[in-house]
Length: 185
Picture 1 (cartoon, one colour):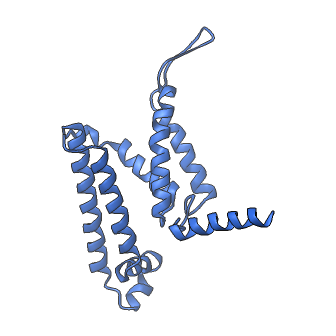
Picture 2: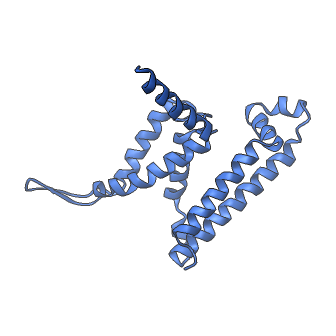
Picture 3: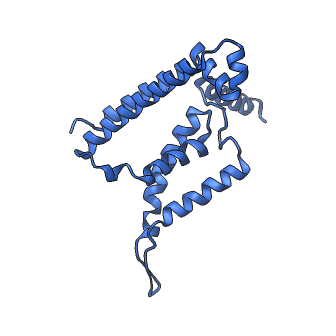
């Protein structure tokens, strides 16, 4: 297996860096304008077909990289690996994190992976004070479906929306809290 923790994190960091730079480029601004209003974007001279095809190619490239890493990690490619469940996971991560936020997607993706393991016990049989409770397959997906509905109902753009965390934001927060401590407030 060629995939290990370092390769995975390294490629994840490179992907985030590339997408962040892509979003802040003129191409990214064109994609944002297409997302907001296709007619207005086309009226401003944005080639819709070109930008949509190129965004599909970029997405397919990174999906291929992710698939290669997954195949190398599990050492096999099986059609059952790519089930409805995996598609549902990706949709939950993107929608809950925020449709326009890289930071939100990364945070929710990490939280989702942790919660998947924490909630694994919900699907397995349990014994509680002598009472045997059978495992309920699919209970994790039910919990995540309820979470998705709550986010869609109350947070229309996801938890982060289009906001991003940055080093400047972090320095500003840390700097302000130090100043408040020094001033005694």
